[in-house]
Length: 494
Image (tube, rainbow, N blue to C red; front, side, top):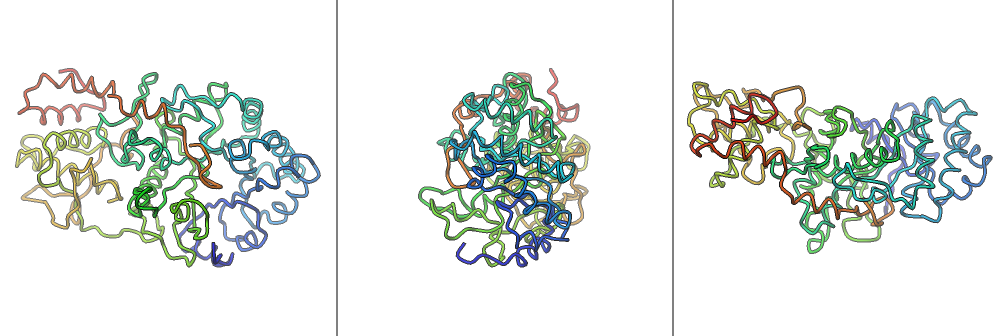
Protein backbone atom coordinates (compact mmCIF):
# COMPACT_ATOMS: atom_id res chain seq x y z
CA UNK A 1 0.00 0.00 0.00
CA UNK A 2 1.25 3.48 -0.78
CA UNK A 3 -0.05 4.67 2.60
CA UNK A 4 -0.43 2.07 5.34
CA UNK A 5 -2.90 2.94 8.13
CA UNK A 6 -1.46 3.11 11.62
CA UNK A 7 -2.15 0.03 13.81
CA UNK A 8 -4.47 2.06 16.03
CA UNK A 9 -6.44 3.16 12.96
CA UNK A 10 -6.78 -0.45 11.91
CA UNK A 11 -8.06 -1.62 15.28
CA UNK A 12 -10.47 1.32 15.43
CA UNK A 13 -11.87 0.25 12.05
CA UNK A 14 -12.12 -3.39 13.14
CA UNK A 15 -14.02 -2.50 16.30
CA UNK A 16 -16.33 -0.04 14.57
CA UNK A 17 -17.31 -2.76 12.08
CA UNK A 18 -17.68 -5.45 14.76
CA UNK A 19 -14.97 -7.60 13.15
CA UNK A 20 -13.99 -10.05 15.87
CA UNK A 21 -11.54 -12.39 14.09
CA UNK A 22 -8.52 -11.44 11.97
CA UNK A 23 -5.55 -13.14 10.38
CA UNK A 24 -2.19 -11.35 10.21
CA UNK A 25 0.49 -12.34 7.70
CA UNK A 26 3.22 -11.72 10.25
CA UNK A 27 3.47 -10.91 13.95
CA UNK A 28 4.18 -7.18 13.81
CA UNK A 29 4.71 -5.98 17.41
CA UNK A 30 3.04 -2.60 16.85
CA UNK A 31 -0.04 -4.27 15.38
CA UNK A 32 -0.18 -6.76 18.23
CA UNK A 33 0.17 -3.95 20.77
CA UNK A 34 -2.77 -2.16 19.18
CA UNK A 35 -4.86 -5.35 19.37
CA UNK A 36 -4.23 -5.78 23.09
CA UNK A 37 -7.36 -5.86 25.24
CA UNK A 38 -9.69 -5.54 22.26
CA UNK A 39 -10.95 -9.12 22.53
CA UNK A 40 -10.37 -9.61 18.81
CA UNK A 41 -9.24 -13.16 18.06
CA UNK A 42 -5.97 -13.16 16.12
CA UNK A 43 -4.09 -15.62 13.93
CA UNK A 44 -0.43 -14.62 13.71
CA UNK A 45 1.86 -15.93 10.98
CA UNK A 46 5.41 -17.02 10.41
CA UNK A 47 6.39 -15.43 7.08
CA UNK A 48 7.82 -17.82 4.48
CA UNK A 49 11.21 -16.15 4.64
CA UNK A 50 11.54 -17.13 8.32
CA UNK A 51 10.93 -20.84 7.74
CA UNK A 52 14.59 -21.64 7.12
CA UNK A 53 15.69 -20.38 10.53
CA UNK A 54 12.78 -21.82 12.51
CA UNK A 55 12.72 -25.15 10.68
CA UNK A 56 16.39 -25.71 11.45
CA UNK A 57 16.45 -24.74 15.12
CA UNK A 58 14.31 -25.61 18.10
CA UNK A 59 15.86 -22.66 19.95
CA UNK A 60 14.97 -20.21 17.17
CA UNK A 61 11.37 -21.45 17.24
CA UNK A 62 11.27 -21.01 21.02
CA UNK A 63 12.59 -17.46 20.70
CA UNK A 64 9.97 -16.70 18.02
CA UNK A 65 7.15 -17.90 20.29
CA UNK A 66 8.55 -15.98 23.28
CA UNK A 67 8.82 -12.73 21.30
CA UNK A 68 5.74 -12.89 19.10
CA UNK A 69 3.24 -14.90 21.13
CA UNK A 70 4.02 -15.27 24.82
CA UNK A 71 4.98 -11.59 25.19
CA UNK A 72 1.52 -10.55 24.00
CA UNK A 73 -0.76 -13.31 25.30
CA UNK A 74 -3.37 -13.16 26.85
CA UNK A 75 -3.80 -9.40 26.36
CA UNK A 76 -3.85 -10.21 22.66
CA UNK A 77 -6.29 -13.05 22.07
CA UNK A 78 -4.00 -15.15 19.85
CA UNK A 79 -5.77 -18.33 18.77
CA UNK A 80 -3.46 -19.84 16.16
CA UNK A 81 -0.09 -19.63 14.42
CA UNK A 82 -0.12 -19.98 10.64
CA UNK A 83 3.27 -21.35 9.63
CA UNK A 84 4.07 -19.88 6.22
CA UNK A 85 1.62 -19.28 3.40
CA UNK A 86 0.97 -21.80 0.59
CA UNK A 87 4.49 -23.16 1.06
CA UNK A 88 3.90 -26.45 -0.77
CA UNK A 89 2.78 -24.70 -3.95
CA UNK A 90 4.49 -21.29 -3.75
CA UNK A 91 7.87 -22.38 -2.34
CA UNK A 92 8.16 -26.16 -2.78
CA UNK A 93 11.90 -26.06 -2.04
CA UNK A 94 11.01 -25.05 1.51
CA UNK A 95 8.56 -27.95 1.96
CA UNK A 96 11.04 -30.15 3.92
CA UNK A 97 11.30 -27.39 6.53
CA UNK A 98 7.55 -27.10 7.11
CA UNK A 99 7.00 -30.01 9.49
CA UNK A 100 10.15 -29.37 11.57
CA UNK A 101 9.07 -25.73 11.95
CA UNK A 102 5.57 -26.74 13.04
CA UNK A 103 6.91 -29.28 15.55
CA UNK A 104 9.48 -26.88 17.01
CA UNK A 105 6.80 -24.18 17.41
CA UNK A 106 4.49 -26.70 19.05
CA UNK A 107 7.28 -27.67 21.47
CA UNK A 108 7.67 -24.00 22.35
CA UNK A 109 3.94 -23.62 22.99
CA UNK A 110 3.95 -26.68 25.24
CA UNK A 111 6.94 -25.35 27.18
CA UNK A 112 5.13 -22.03 27.67
CA UNK A 113 1.89 -23.83 28.65
CA UNK A 114 0.10 -22.16 25.72
CA UNK A 115 -0.71 -25.22 23.63
CA UNK A 116 -4.18 -25.44 25.20
CA UNK A 117 -5.09 -22.03 23.78
CA UNK A 118 -3.16 -21.72 20.53
CA UNK A 119 -3.20 -24.11 17.57
CA UNK A 120 -0.56 -24.50 14.86
CA UNK A 121 -1.28 -25.15 11.20
CA UNK A 122 -0.22 -23.93 7.76
CA UNK A 123 -2.41 -22.45 4.98
CA UNK A 124 -2.50 -24.44 1.74
CA UNK A 125 -3.48 -23.47 -1.76
CA UNK A 126 -6.39 -25.60 -2.97
CA UNK A 127 -4.15 -26.58 -5.91
CA UNK A 128 -2.66 -29.35 -3.77
CA UNK A 129 -6.02 -31.16 -4.20
CA UNK A 130 -6.16 -33.02 -7.51
CA UNK A 131 -9.22 -34.28 -9.39
CA UNK A 132 -11.31 -32.08 -7.12
CA UNK A 133 -14.68 -32.74 -8.72
CA UNK A 134 -16.60 -34.77 -7.96
CA UNK A 135 -15.35 -34.15 -4.41
CA UNK A 136 -15.63 -37.84 -3.48
CA UNK A 137 -12.75 -38.76 -5.81
CA UNK A 138 -10.44 -35.91 -4.79
CA UNK A 139 -6.96 -36.66 -3.50
CA UNK A 140 -3.88 -34.69 -2.51
CA UNK A 141 -0.95 -34.42 -4.90
CA UNK A 142 0.85 -37.70 -4.14
CA UNK A 143 4.27 -36.08 -4.61
CA UNK A 144 3.53 -34.20 -1.36
CA UNK A 145 2.76 -37.30 0.70
CA UNK A 146 6.05 -37.16 2.59
CA UNK A 147 4.96 -33.78 4.00
CA UNK A 148 1.17 -34.05 4.04
CA UNK A 149 0.85 -37.42 5.75
CA UNK A 150 2.87 -36.47 8.86
CA UNK A 151 1.28 -33.02 8.79
CA UNK A 152 -2.25 -34.42 8.92
CA UNK A 153 -1.23 -36.71 11.78
CA UNK A 154 0.19 -33.66 13.56
CA UNK A 155 -3.05 -31.70 13.06
CA UNK A 156 -5.02 -34.69 14.26
CA UNK A 157 -2.95 -35.11 17.43
CA UNK A 158 -3.06 -31.40 18.33
CA UNK A 159 -6.70 -30.75 17.45
CA UNK A 160 -5.71 -28.19 14.81
CA UNK A 161 -7.53 -27.40 11.56
CA UNK A 162 -6.43 -27.92 7.98
CA UNK A 163 -6.02 -24.36 6.70
CA UNK A 164 -7.13 -23.95 3.09
CA UNK A 165 -7.29 -20.99 0.68
CA UNK A 166 -10.37 -21.21 -1.56
CA UNK A 167 -10.87 -18.91 -4.56
CA UNK A 168 -14.00 -19.59 -6.66
CA UNK A 169 -13.16 -16.43 -8.65
CA UNK A 170 -10.08 -18.08 -10.15
CA UNK A 171 -11.88 -21.41 -10.63
CA UNK A 172 -14.53 -19.55 -12.60
CA UNK A 173 -12.00 -17.54 -14.62
CA UNK A 174 -10.02 -20.64 -15.60
CA UNK A 175 -13.03 -22.73 -16.56
CA UNK A 176 -13.58 -20.89 -19.86
CA UNK A 177 -17.29 -20.54 -19.26
CA UNK A 178 -17.95 -24.10 -18.08
CA UNK A 179 -18.45 -23.06 -14.45
CA UNK A 180 -21.51 -20.77 -14.31
CA UNK A 181 -20.98 -17.40 -12.65
CA UNK A 182 -24.01 -18.04 -10.43
CA UNK A 183 -22.39 -21.26 -9.18
CA UNK A 184 -19.28 -19.33 -8.17
CA UNK A 185 -21.24 -16.50 -6.49
CA UNK A 186 -23.55 -18.62 -4.27
CA UNK A 187 -26.55 -17.44 -6.27
CA UNK A 188 -29.63 -19.70 -6.12
CA UNK A 189 -29.60 -22.36 -8.83
CA UNK A 190 -32.43 -24.38 -10.35
CA UNK A 191 -32.00 -28.12 -9.77
CA UNK A 192 -30.77 -28.79 -13.30
CA UNK A 193 -27.89 -26.35 -12.80
CA UNK A 194 -26.65 -27.86 -9.55
CA UNK A 195 -23.64 -30.17 -9.66
CA UNK A 196 -24.06 -33.68 -8.31
CA UNK A 197 -21.42 -36.10 -7.11
CA UNK A 198 -22.40 -39.32 -8.87
CA UNK A 199 -20.63 -41.40 -6.18
CA UNK A 200 -22.42 -39.89 -3.19
CA UNK A 201 -25.46 -38.21 -4.83
CA UNK A 202 -24.59 -35.07 -2.87
CA UNK A 203 -25.75 -31.87 -4.56
CA UNK A 204 -23.45 -28.86 -4.84
CA UNK A 205 -24.86 -25.38 -5.33
CA UNK A 206 -21.57 -23.46 -5.16
CA UNK A 207 -17.85 -23.84 -5.84
CA UNK A 208 -16.87 -23.04 -2.24
CA UNK A 209 -18.61 -26.07 -0.75
CA UNK A 210 -17.29 -28.35 -3.47
CA UNK A 211 -13.67 -27.36 -2.78
CA UNK A 212 -14.08 -27.70 1.00
CA UNK A 213 -15.63 -31.14 0.63
CA UNK A 214 -12.86 -32.12 -1.80
CA UNK A 215 -10.43 -31.41 1.04
CA UNK A 216 -12.45 -33.58 3.42
CA UNK A 217 -12.53 -36.47 0.93
CA UNK A 218 -8.81 -36.08 0.18
CA UNK A 219 -8.07 -36.39 3.90
CA UNK A 220 -10.36 -39.41 4.17
CA UNK A 221 -8.37 -41.01 1.32
CA UNK A 222 -5.39 -40.85 3.69
CA UNK A 223 -7.51 -42.25 6.57
CA UNK A 224 -7.83 -38.89 8.32
CA UNK A 225 -11.45 -38.09 9.15
CA UNK A 226 -11.49 -35.84 12.19
CA UNK A 227 -9.49 -32.76 11.13
CA UNK A 228 -11.75 -29.75 10.49
CA UNK A 229 -11.24 -27.43 7.53
CA UNK A 230 -10.68 -23.72 8.13
CA UNK A 231 -10.74 -21.44 5.09
CA UNK A 232 -7.99 -18.92 5.71
CA UNK A 233 -8.54 -16.94 2.48
CA UNK A 234 -11.43 -16.41 0.13
CA UNK A 235 -12.99 -13.40 -1.56
CA UNK A 236 -13.71 -11.67 -4.84
CA UNK A 237 -12.03 -8.63 -6.47
CA UNK A 238 -14.23 -5.56 -6.86
CA UNK A 239 -12.35 -4.06 -9.81
CA UNK A 240 -10.33 -5.38 -12.74
CA UNK A 241 -9.30 -4.80 -16.33
CA UNK A 242 -12.61 -4.59 -18.24
CA UNK A 243 -11.17 -6.44 -21.23
CA UNK A 244 -9.58 -9.37 -19.41
CA UNK A 245 -11.31 -9.37 -16.00
CA UNK A 246 -14.91 -8.38 -16.76
CA UNK A 247 -16.33 -10.18 -13.73
CA UNK A 248 -14.12 -8.39 -11.21
CA UNK A 249 -16.84 -5.90 -10.26
CA UNK A 250 -18.15 -4.38 -7.06
CA UNK A 251 -21.53 -6.00 -7.65
CA UNK A 252 -19.99 -9.47 -7.91
CA UNK A 253 -17.72 -8.86 -4.93
CA UNK A 254 -20.74 -7.72 -2.93
CA UNK A 255 -22.73 -10.76 -4.06
CA UNK A 256 -19.96 -13.27 -3.29
CA UNK A 257 -18.92 -11.92 0.10
CA UNK A 258 -22.48 -11.16 1.27
CA UNK A 259 -23.67 -14.63 0.31
CA UNK A 260 -20.52 -16.21 1.76
CA UNK A 261 -21.02 -14.53 5.12
CA UNK A 262 -24.66 -15.54 5.22
CA UNK A 263 -23.75 -19.10 4.20
CA UNK A 264 -21.22 -19.40 7.03
CA UNK A 265 -23.27 -17.62 9.70
CA UNK A 266 -26.32 -19.78 9.01
CA UNK A 267 -24.16 -22.84 9.88
CA UNK A 268 -25.25 -24.38 6.59
CA UNK A 269 -22.08 -26.44 6.44
CA UNK A 270 -21.30 -28.41 3.29
CA UNK A 271 -23.15 -31.31 1.65
CA UNK A 272 -20.68 -33.77 3.22
CA UNK A 273 -20.91 -32.13 6.65
CA UNK A 274 -24.27 -30.30 6.84
CA UNK A 275 -24.69 -28.08 9.85
CA UNK A 276 -20.94 -27.98 10.57
CA UNK A 277 -19.72 -24.40 10.28
CA UNK A 278 -16.62 -23.79 8.17
CA UNK A 279 -14.62 -20.96 9.82
CA UNK A 280 -13.74 -18.59 6.99
CA UNK A 281 -11.58 -15.49 6.57
CA UNK A 282 -12.26 -12.96 3.81
CA UNK A 283 -9.30 -11.74 1.81
CA UNK A 284 -8.73 -8.89 2.50
CA UNK A 285 -9.29 -5.88 4.77
CA UNK A 286 -7.63 -3.20 2.58
CA UNK A 287 -7.02 -2.70 -1.11
CA UNK A 288 -3.33 -2.81 -2.06
CA UNK A 289 -2.90 0.00 -4.57
CA UNK A 290 0.78 -0.73 -5.32
CA UNK A 291 0.49 -4.52 -5.60
CA UNK A 292 2.05 -5.85 -8.83
CA UNK A 293 0.25 -8.09 -11.28
CA UNK A 294 -3.10 -7.78 -13.02
CA UNK A 295 -5.44 -4.91 -12.19
CA UNK A 296 -7.67 -7.06 -10.00
CA UNK A 297 -4.73 -7.93 -7.72
CA UNK A 298 -5.00 -4.45 -6.22
CA UNK A 299 -8.72 -4.58 -5.47
CA UNK A 300 -9.64 -7.41 -3.13
CA UNK A 301 -10.12 -5.15 -0.11
CA UNK A 302 -13.30 -4.43 1.79
CA UNK A 303 -11.90 -0.91 2.37
CA UNK A 304 -9.51 1.46 0.67
CA UNK A 305 -6.44 2.62 2.60
CA UNK A 306 -8.46 5.51 4.08
CA UNK A 307 -10.95 3.13 5.63
CA UNK A 308 -13.72 3.94 3.12
CA UNK A 309 -15.79 0.87 2.19
CA UNK A 310 -15.01 -0.33 -1.34
CA UNK A 311 -18.67 -1.35 -1.61
CA UNK A 312 -21.58 -1.92 0.75
CA UNK A 313 -22.10 -5.51 1.80
CA UNK A 314 -25.79 -6.41 1.99
CA UNK A 315 -26.14 -8.26 5.26
CA UNK A 316 -29.53 -7.44 6.75
CA UNK A 317 -30.09 -9.69 9.73
CA UNK A 318 -26.46 -10.81 9.89
CA UNK A 319 -24.99 -8.15 12.15
CA UNK A 320 -23.34 -4.82 11.46
CA UNK A 321 -20.62 -4.82 8.83
CA UNK A 322 -19.65 -2.03 6.45
CA UNK A 323 -22.82 -0.30 5.26
CA UNK A 324 -25.77 -2.49 6.19
CA UNK A 325 -28.70 -2.71 3.78
CA UNK A 326 -31.53 -1.43 5.97
CA UNK A 327 -34.19 -0.93 3.34
CA UNK A 328 -37.34 -2.99 3.74
CA UNK A 329 -39.32 -1.39 0.94
CA UNK A 330 -38.09 -3.51 -1.97
CA UNK A 331 -39.73 -6.55 -3.46
CA UNK A 332 -38.58 -9.34 -5.76
CA UNK A 333 -40.91 -10.04 -8.66
CA UNK A 334 -40.97 -12.05 -11.88
CA UNK A 335 -39.32 -10.12 -14.69
CA UNK A 336 -41.82 -8.92 -17.29
CA UNK A 337 -41.54 -10.97 -20.48
CA UNK A 338 -39.48 -13.73 -18.84
CA UNK A 339 -39.53 -17.17 -20.46
CA UNK A 340 -42.44 -19.10 -18.85
CA UNK A 341 -40.40 -22.31 -18.74
CA UNK A 342 -37.58 -20.58 -16.87
CA UNK A 343 -40.11 -19.00 -14.53
CA UNK A 344 -41.63 -22.42 -13.89
CA UNK A 345 -38.23 -23.95 -13.15
CA UNK A 346 -37.38 -21.10 -10.76
CA UNK A 347 -40.78 -21.42 -9.06
CA UNK A 348 -40.23 -25.15 -8.58
CA UNK A 349 -36.84 -24.47 -7.02
CA UNK A 350 -38.14 -21.77 -4.67
CA UNK A 351 -40.99 -23.97 -3.43
CA UNK A 352 -38.72 -27.01 -3.14
CA UNK A 353 -35.01 -26.69 -2.31
CA UNK A 354 -35.48 -22.96 -1.66
CA UNK A 355 -37.77 -23.84 1.28
CA UNK A 356 -40.39 -21.20 0.57
CA UNK A 357 -43.77 -22.01 2.14
CA UNK A 358 -45.91 -22.04 -1.01
CA UNK A 359 -49.06 -23.37 0.64
CA UNK A 360 -50.77 -19.99 0.11
CA UNK A 361 -50.55 -20.63 -3.64
CA UNK A 362 -52.76 -23.73 -3.47
CA UNK A 363 -56.31 -23.59 -4.78
CA UNK A 364 -58.60 -21.92 -2.26
CA UNK A 365 -55.72 -20.10 -0.53
CA UNK A 366 -55.19 -16.29 -0.45
CA UNK A 367 -52.52 -16.11 -3.18
CA UNK A 368 -53.90 -18.72 -5.61
CA UNK A 369 -55.43 -16.07 -7.86
CA UNK A 370 -54.40 -14.99 -10.37
CA UNK A 371 -53.54 -18.58 -11.29
CA UNK A 372 -50.56 -17.73 -13.51
CA UNK A 373 -46.95 -18.81 -13.35
CA UNK A 374 -45.90 -15.13 -13.26
CA UNK A 375 -48.04 -14.35 -10.21
CA UNK A 376 -47.09 -17.50 -8.33
CA UNK A 377 -43.41 -17.04 -9.16
CA UNK A 378 -43.54 -13.45 -7.91
CA UNK A 379 -44.87 -14.60 -4.55
CA UNK A 380 -42.24 -17.33 -4.20
CA UNK A 381 -39.37 -15.12 -5.39
CA UNK A 382 -40.31 -12.37 -2.96
CA UNK A 383 -40.70 -14.73 -0.01
CA UNK A 384 -37.24 -16.20 -0.69
CA UNK A 385 -35.71 -12.74 -1.16
CA UNK A 386 -37.00 -11.46 2.17
CA UNK A 387 -36.36 -14.77 3.93
CA UNK A 388 -32.72 -14.44 2.90
CA UNK A 389 -32.53 -10.90 4.27
CA UNK A 390 -32.79 -9.19 0.86
CA UNK A 391 -29.18 -10.16 0.33
CA UNK A 392 -27.36 -9.41 -2.89
CA UNK A 393 -27.92 -12.21 -5.39
CA UNK A 394 -31.09 -13.54 -3.73
CA UNK A 395 -33.39 -11.89 -6.28
CA UNK A 396 -31.91 -13.29 -9.47
CA UNK A 397 -33.24 -16.76 -10.30
CA UNK A 398 -31.23 -17.13 -13.51
CA UNK A 399 -32.27 -13.67 -14.64
CA UNK A 400 -36.06 -14.08 -14.46
CA UNK A 401 -36.47 -12.00 -11.29
CA UNK A 402 -36.05 -8.29 -10.67
CA UNK A 403 -36.21 -5.96 -7.66
CA UNK A 404 -38.96 -3.33 -7.52
CA UNK A 405 -40.27 -0.80 -5.01
CA UNK A 406 -43.89 -1.53 -5.99
CA UNK A 407 -45.69 -3.72 -3.48
CA UNK A 408 -47.22 -6.67 -5.42
CA UNK A 409 -49.67 -7.48 -2.59
CA UNK A 410 -53.31 -7.70 -3.60
CA UNK A 411 -56.52 -8.37 -1.70
CA UNK A 412 -55.84 -10.79 1.14
CA UNK A 413 -52.57 -11.91 -0.45
CA UNK A 414 -49.90 -9.99 1.48
CA UNK A 415 -46.33 -10.24 0.22
CA UNK A 416 -43.28 -10.25 2.45
CA UNK A 417 -42.03 -6.69 2.88
CA UNK A 418 -43.24 -3.79 4.96
CA UNK A 419 -46.21 -5.63 6.43
CA UNK A 420 -45.63 -9.19 5.30
CA UNK A 421 -43.36 -11.87 6.68
CA UNK A 422 -40.94 -14.06 4.82
CA UNK A 423 -42.11 -17.63 4.97
CA UNK A 424 -39.44 -20.29 4.63
CA UNK A 425 -39.79 -23.90 5.71
CA UNK A 426 -37.32 -25.29 8.23
CA UNK A 427 -34.77 -23.56 10.41
CA UNK A 428 -32.23 -22.68 7.76
CA UNK A 429 -32.65 -19.85 5.31
CA UNK A 430 -30.18 -21.38 2.91
CA UNK A 431 -31.24 -23.79 0.17
CA UNK A 432 -31.25 -27.36 1.41
CA UNK A 433 -27.83 -28.88 1.35
CA UNK A 434 -29.90 -31.70 0.85
CA UNK A 435 -7.44 -23.49 -6.07
CA UNK A 436 -3.56 -23.44 -7.81
CA UNK A 437 -0.87 -21.72 -9.71
CA UNK A 438 0.37 -18.59 -8.00
CA UNK A 439 -1.46 -15.47 -8.98
CA UNK A 440 -0.12 -13.38 -6.13
CA UNK A 441 1.38 -13.90 -2.72
CA UNK A 442 -1.87 -15.06 -1.18
CA UNK A 443 -4.02 -16.26 -4.05
CA UNK A 444 -3.94 -18.86 -6.79
CA UNK A 445 -5.74 -20.56 -9.60
CA UNK A 446 -7.54 -23.85 -8.89
CA UNK A 447 -7.53 -27.10 -10.78
CA UNK A 448 -10.91 -27.13 -12.46
CA UNK A 449 -10.53 -29.72 -15.20
CA UNK A 450 -12.68 -32.40 -13.59
CA UNK A 451 -15.06 -29.84 -12.09
CA UNK A 452 -15.61 -28.35 -15.52
CA UNK A 453 -16.51 -31.76 -16.91
CA UNK A 454 -19.15 -32.41 -14.27
CA UNK A 455 -20.78 -29.00 -13.85
CA UNK A 456 -22.05 -29.16 -17.42
CA UNK A 457 -23.61 -32.60 -16.96
CA UNK A 458 -27.28 -33.14 -16.17
CA UNK A 459 -28.10 -34.09 -12.60
CA UNK A 460 -29.26 -37.62 -11.96
CA UNK A 461 -31.78 -36.66 -9.31
CA UNK A 462 -32.94 -33.66 -11.29
CA UNK A 463 -33.52 -35.90 -14.28
CA UNK A 464 -35.51 -38.35 -12.16
CA UNK A 465 -37.60 -35.47 -10.86
CA UNK A 466 -38.41 -34.31 -14.37
CA UNK A 467 -39.18 -37.83 -15.59
CA UNK A 468 -41.63 -38.35 -12.75
CA UNK A 469 -43.42 -35.15 -13.66
CA UNK A 470 -43.10 -35.48 -17.41
CA UNK A 471 -46.35 -37.39 -17.80
CA UNK A 472 -48.37 -34.50 -16.39
CA UNK A 473 -50.17 -32.30 -18.88
CA UNK A 474 -48.58 -28.82 -19.05
CA UNK A 475 -51.69 -27.07 -17.76
CA UNK A 476 -51.46 -29.03 -14.51
CA UNK A 477 -47.72 -29.09 -14.11
CA UNK A 478 -47.29 -26.08 -11.83
CA UNK A 479 -49.94 -27.13 -9.34
CA UNK A 480 -48.50 -30.61 -9.11
CA UNK A 481 -45.01 -29.26 -8.46
CA UNK A 482 -46.34 -27.20 -5.56
CA UNK A 483 -48.10 -30.22 -4.14
CA UNK A 484 -44.95 -32.30 -4.39
CA UNK A 485 -42.83 -29.61 -2.74
CA UNK A 486 -45.19 -29.65 0.24
CA UNK A 487 -44.85 -33.40 0.65
CA UNK A 488 -41.17 -33.26 1.45
CA UNK A 489 -37.72 -32.64 0.09
CA UNK A 490 -37.65 -35.71 -2.15
CA UNK A 491 -39.63 -36.06 -5.38
CA UNK A 492 -42.58 -38.43 -5.20
CA UNK A 493 -43.63 -40.75 -7.98
CA UNK A 494 -47.05 -39.83 -9.38
